Length: 74
Image 1 (tube, rainbow, N blue to C red):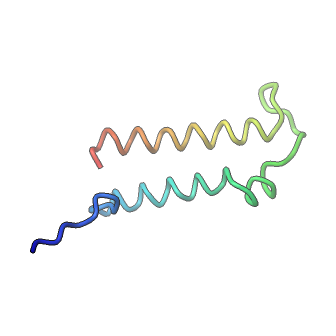
Image 2: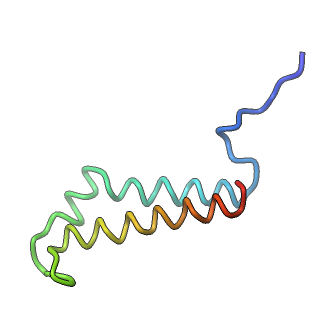
């Protein structure tokens, strides 16, 4: 019987780093980190409260990591 490795686990060091980066960035969008860091109404950045700008930047970074993973075929 041949054992196959799970396709959910990254096989390369680059894949492991990108998964780690994705998880860290995603953790910063979840409570309690978002409450401690981003839950502010002031200052306004680009006409948006700080919380919205904070989450917008993090979500763009997360999407960038996913695009990078897709382009590398990881």
